[in-house]
Image (tube, rainbow over all chains, first blue to last red; front, side, top):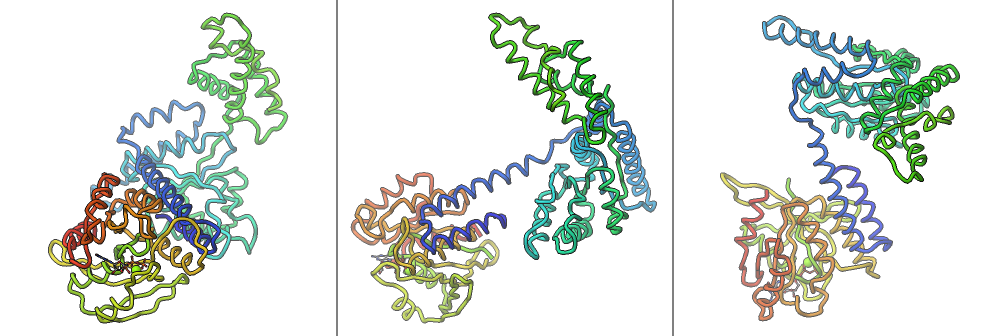
Length: 323
Length: 201
Ligand SMILES: Nc1nc2c(ncn2[C@@H]2O[C@H](COP(=O)(O)OP(=O)(O)OP(=O)(O)O)[C@@H](O)[C@H]2O)c(=O)[nH]1
Ligand SMILES: [Mg+2]
């Protein structure tokens, strides 16, 4: 049983002693927490992805829109891994494979998706046992009292064993100054990396500038993360392509005029709020909004053709500038 | 080390079984570790007879702390150690007595850390309405126990005349659970309990 559940039950025992709850209530809780615990354990085993061929996964990566630099670096890393493995087989000295990475880029540029694919790639290369992805952020790692942080970090590392631990907005760990436990989290993380070499891969992700700054002020990290990948913002054409893929997945299409409207909206938005605007997340929101608007538009129609049902029109995107 | 917890309603015969089972396993030193709610530990040593005289009573809530004994049991090629826990009786709801609430909290605190659960139900009182009679909390222990896997019911006091009917009722009521009939007075059913524990160590 995990520490969290233990703490929970111990707390209930205190309440029982104080007469705040009865024995039946405590047992009901114990039963439901153990059920949850069981489910979580099942999920963990489902986390391990079934055997699949590296070619299929790479094809999936290369079919992703844009991400040209990312694809190039992944190919490089894989080539390097291959050669090191071959050298080892021939009895030549092989550099230990350190695959911890830093992902830099704005939100919605595909960092998590690529991390998930890398997990599968490394699993099929037998560099990772399971290849699953555990996504965490500051609140998952930083505790509230001395020792709490190390514990939380250890727990997350344990979950990520055999896979990838992905820390989003990693620089926020350095936030808060001397008295903050974020620093403790970084130290605990570094220790976990030494203790469990090759057992999991750590990816630190976040905005370009913040990540650069984060690594500069934590010089110990630099050598431990040899692979840096920059995620460029998608250009407007790529964003429209992404939009088309997204609607196709949902069995919709975008009319020509709607596409033009989308293009204009995306580029004017980019001009207006430059740095952090746009990217795949905005596109997703726009699409979801237009699907709702289309439904409202069709609601009172007495008869809908197939074409009506699948087509997102220009007017369905109206007002999306304000998203 | 595996913890094997013995629990159930008050007065069902937990302590009697605890001591007789130790005797059956050939223990000759009755030393118990007592843990209170603050996890402070003290040791107590008895002879079998003084233990029986001091720790067993015909009135409920006799046991108020957790008694732990280090035992070992023969298993395939050798023996395995385990910690055997006698606990205080559990009742439904919120007791008015602070001492009872404390002792129940102690029992339940030790429940989830135990890997083997022996749940005692008094067969002689099943069809009556006593403090020891089967009630909601027994059904909850059963539900929890089944989740953990290493769980069985000890149907106690099988030497009494009303017990057979009580045992039949338990078997039917908990038909997906292993129910072992035992008597601490006649020392029956002990072999089955020993096998069950050994299998789950
Ligand atoms: N006939 C018969 N009586 C038993 C048996 N086991 C226990 N008793 C009696 O049941 C009563 C309660 O026994 P305990 O062993 O103290 O029961 P307990 O479950 O430990 O009780 P608490 O500690 O108060 O929760 C005593 O009067 C025992 O003599 C048995 O196998 N047969
Ligand atoms: Mg007792």
